[in-house]
Image 1: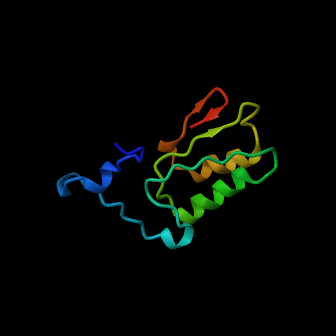
Image 2: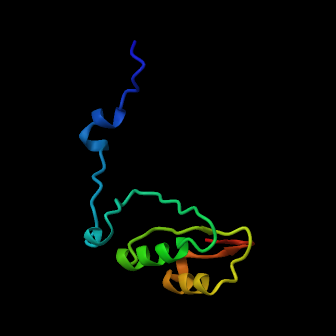
Length: 98
């Protein structure tokens, strides 16, 4: 037996395969539809600004954005981020903006 992990996705029957179709804004951001992205960094390093730019480039073709800040969500740029996101995709739980 080999130590190599078998990739079962390579051998899926055709009826079980899912094609990852890129959306029409892919050329603006180069992010695949099934991507999960985590932005981590110190205060003032541009995380929220980058997320706002990504939302603009993706033209609303995202499923969910979760913003966690253990200190404060009372920042002007968070208010702008909240305005950019559709109402259905956010809610506030303590210091978490979902």
